[in-house]
Length: 150
Image 1 (tube, rainbow, N blue to C red):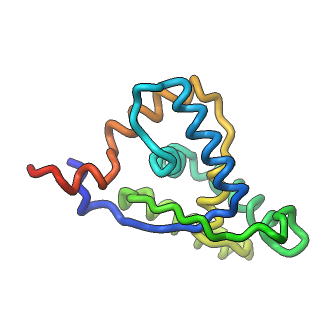
Image 2: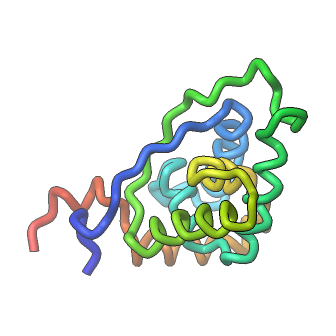
């Protein structure tokens, strides 16, 4: 059973461009499922869990280029918007392992960059919604679980 104890609470920082993209994803899902209760952290947790590693690797490489000098990131944008996630150990490990794998390939990256890359994932929301709902059922956010007793 999922418990708050087997999740890792991590905070990443987003640029305003990332926050806007994540908000657009959250709004698109909310429009399709107005009765479903979730927030942007739930959307990101699902992106981490449901994105195949090969896609995460490609997103990480592209994001690394975006954030480096000469990339497309607007210089006036600041990486100061917090996003706190409660990730199951396997998903936290997935982000850590991918950052390590990319660094081994001489791609300058971080766990934060990978999460920021995921903020820009584009999917068919109607096809994604059932997977998202199933994810929320299987892996509820630890905020709710802290208060439940077995």
